[in-house]
Image: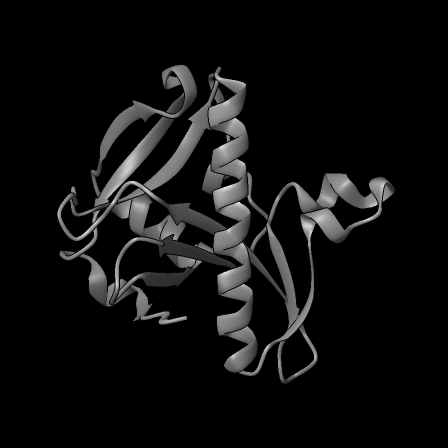
Length: 162
């Protein structure tokens, strides 16, 4: 794996997470932290989601964020890419402890934020025969390709303008 590419992708992903934080705080959630904020002793728990909020009822809300930097208005497969496994082991929605899955298309000007309860996403994947494709660093991951326009009604789709 190319360390520079990984570092750049990680930085881009963290920037996407912060945009999601600002957007959700405007919607009334109270931000508690990211995986980078957690004490070393608690890191294992945070590897199963990215962001932690408290809602208006005082309940914790755990969010997994995927920031897509490939899709642009000129280049778009029309898919949401949802990780199933990595190196032959369950990963992605199979192992996440998040409550919500957020997919952020950083290079789109509208309909760039797609949110769904993780349980609903798992059900959607289980009930459909989505194409499974390899990808990621050295094709180590297997991912479901969800045609997002066909299944848009399952998601809460919003636009981040900041």
